[in-house]
Amino acid sequence: MQETELAEVRRYGMMPNHGLQFGDMRHNTGFLLRLAWLQVHQSLEQNGQPHGLTAAEYTILHVIAQTPGVRQGHLAQALYIKPAAMTRVIRNFEDLELVERHVPDGDRRTVRLTIKPKGQQSLDQERAHFSGALHTVGTPISAEEQADLNHLLRRFCGLNHEGAPTDV
Amino acid sequence: MQETELAEVRRYGMMPNHGLQFGDMRHNTGFLLRLAWLQVHQSLEQNGQPHGLTAAEYTILHVIAQTPGVRQGHLAQALYIKPAAMTRVIRNFEDLELVERHVPDGDRRTVRLTIKPKGQQSLDQERAHFSGALHTVGTPISAEEQADLNHLLRRFCGLNHEGAPTDV
DNA sequence: TATTGTTATACTCTATAACTATA
DNA sequence: TATAGTTATAGAGTATAACAATA
Image (cartoon, rainbow over all chains, first blue to last red):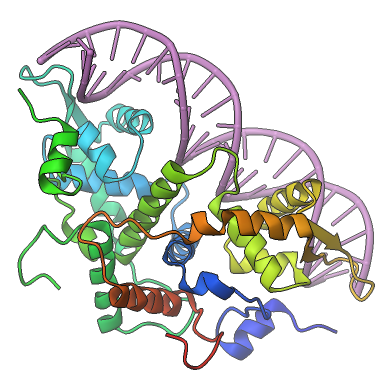
């Protein structure tokens, strides 16, 4: 009789890989980024409330809160969300009274966004969920390694031109 | 008159961030992983052939090629794809004669997968696309930094128990 | 004529649960 | 009774192009 998946996890303390070979993909940054993100996504999914914000929604709402009056198009560009998709997210936020849309007189083609009290409340409620400790599948990485990882990811994403010079 | 997006990119040599503030998210590994992956995804999309393999499909096919006889379920588990979704991908591969499904006599509930000549051909055709140089949005990272990033991502994903001991 | 955002549409992906076959 | 994979279905997300309003 074969050993069950659960028994394997108990025995080896991690996900068994069943002899799978990744070959060159082990050195493919894009592949590793995708796999790591899917891992985080699955972890969030398992621990999340049924009808809370999605990861994309939380991020969008967070940046609006941090950048009052941000332009909708700039938000879409920075977060790699297509304008058409952003329109739906923002309209949904508006329906839920999480954000306010404002069309300025200076350029009436643009839309500027600000957070509303209910939006801030949603952020506060979901913060613990999205800031929670990360579950790594392999050996848990140390705080220093995670800081290194974050630093390299910020460089990769071009996010190192913001914040204090002492920023890790 | 406002400076165009393109002019800004030319002037500053990178994507303008329009004063967007990411705040705490700059230290949220999950957020950074998602953003970095979306960046790679967008880059692949812009350079890709209209009807080639998706990133997920390329990875699945690659691992099947590297691990002849791999079980369909193990593949799904390792790549964070739900069994129901994997069934459709594999059926599609079978229709295109890229892989062969084999139900072994030992356990007739399972499905074992091997690559076929057309599958190997597809991999060869797409290799350059998915292994291509990565476009970073910020300062391009050095080869050493990318190696560090890959190493940390492998640790994060629990992928460091495979391969040669001299593996970077 | 270019830009911003919206609409419409089709398509892909995803999640969930029920189901079949096998162990 | 448990497991592997399949099917069915609804929902979420994505890509594309056409469009209206504004600059």
